[in-house]
Amino acid sequence: MLDDEADAVTTPALEITTAVVERALLDFETLTNAHGAVSGIDRVHTALHGYLIAVCRETCIAANENADITTLFNLIRQQHPKLQIGPPGAEPQKILHGLAQIIDAMNQVRNRSSMAHSNEELLEESEAMLAANAVRSLLHYLIMRLR
Image 1 (cartoon, rainbow, N blue to C red):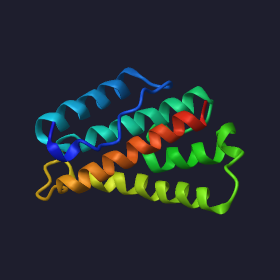
Image 2: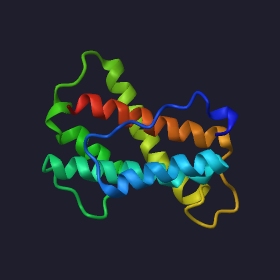
Image 3: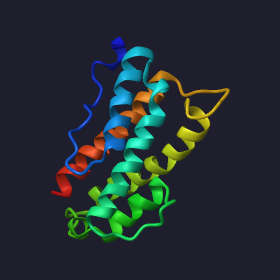
Image 4: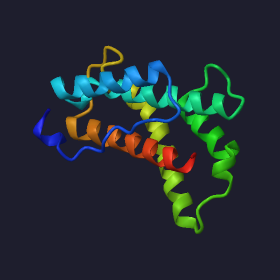
């Protein structure tokens, strides 16, 4: 493990999952421990994508089979019964809106700044960990909220 990762957000134990999601999370941990977060950031994207698909399937939220993570997260926010009774106050909704923007940015990170493609410029390690920690924090939140 790289010294800079000692304070990383832990990867949650997902209650709604698939083999692909679990494999992507394991791959991220393995690649991060060996080479740093930038080597596995595309796997965090894959894990989030698969998790959001699994949540939609479990709760019968209709989603296009090619829907990206931004679309899936918005569908879940709009249609999941446990997210319809939101936390009181505007601030938690602002946080969720901010997370939606992070999710949208993850598409660009994966496609233009990660090892998913032959990109000339990659994320710096600190930004890769920031992105990974944001996704893992979101997963922790969704696990708690969707119970």
